[in-house]
Image (cartoon, rainbow, N blue to C red; front, top):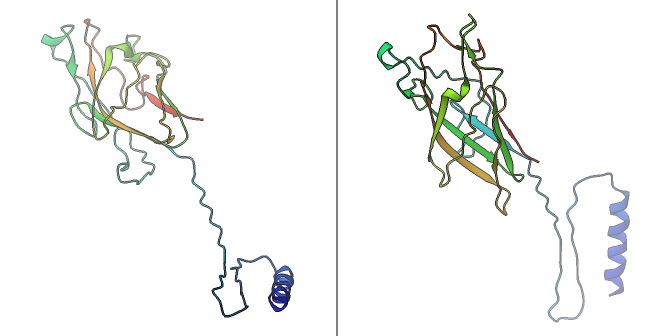
Length: 210
C-alpha cells in the first residue's frame, strides 16, 4: 500500500501545481489478488433562473416551454347600435381568440404571484366625456390548464390584486380565456372613447412575485 499512498501524493502535488481548470478524478488501488474497489467522483450543479411570464392577448407559446417576449398589443372594440344604447352588455370584437376574447397566461417558478391591472383614468372621448373602466367586464373560462387564471376587475386606477398561491413545487402554470364585454348600463354622449394608446385606453397588467 505504500506505493499507492506515494502515487496519491504525487498526483495531489501535481494537481495543486496546475492552473485553474476542469479536472477529472482518478484513483488506483493495488494489493493482493483479491477483490478490490476503486472510486472516482464527479460533482454536478444546475442553476435554474427565476422566470415570470405574463401573457394577455397575442404572445409567444407557453404550453411548449417556449417563453419569449412579444410586443404586440391587441385592441378590443365595442360598437353598440343606437337601439342597444343603455340596454345591457355588448360583446367586443378583436383579441387573439376573436370576439373580444384574449389568451391570458402566467408561468412562474418562485412562489406566489400577484396580478393586477392599472388604468390611467376613465376612457375619454377627448371632449370631456368619459366611460368608467368598471363598464368593461371580464368573463373567465378555462383554456388549457385545469384551473382558470382569474382576471382582475378593471377600474379607473389600479384594480384589486389577484393572488395565485404556488404549490409546494413553487411552479405556477395557469391560463384562461378572458372575454371582455361592455356593460352598456347607461346612455352616454356620442363619441369614440379610448383608442390605440390614446384617451386613457390602455390597461397595464402587472404580475409580481418574490
